[in-house]
Length: 287
Image (cartoon, rainbow, N blue to C red):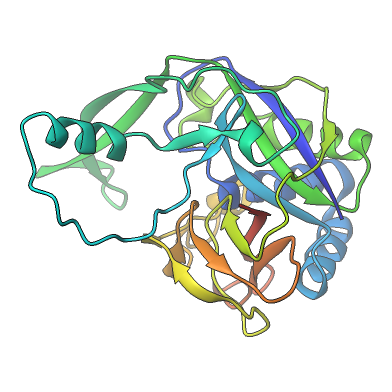
């Protein structure tokens, strides 16, 4: 497969983070809307056997996620000068992509989003009334920068990849798209790029789950719980929740004795409807 960079522009705030597995789900819905159920079935079946499109999360233009560092035993005494430096370093979540890939990078952005948390009433869907004292919060992310990059390994050419991402984002991205959130534009200049490093140490560019076929060692990763929901037309007539999955976060680092382009698998048996899948694939780059 070839490695590509897809450039996107945010035209509105986001409620749902631009994670690789969620973006992949939107691409699948785009295929369904434009080419029908048989095309989706063919795409999903093929990707469960041998992936043809592996998608990263979105990162600020010219950036990738920061590799999870090697734990070190701190021996020096913390001082008033060193402690703020350590805290500041932990808040940096991105690295210049030009270190690892044939892309140009500028200075790392200091702030990506301004977050606003709003409380909402819970609604009883049976009686269609407000549930007393039952509030939930929703975080809206207002972009401080608008240009982002998505990286993908694929067997498709640049034109097909641009088409798939355009379809995926055309109806908005994530929660509250119907009221203007998640307005994402694909800039249409998908480009083929290359990796720079020749190494047995790799970094994952999106969330993933390990499959039985993956042979990785020395895995360093944060984990999170993915409680996914179905989207598109499915959300109107079936149970929306998928089964819960524990996933490794982007930025995970590991070693592999063979050269690889991705890690993970497409997860089946994730919902009462067997057609529904969860993406557990992540593109990886040698670091």
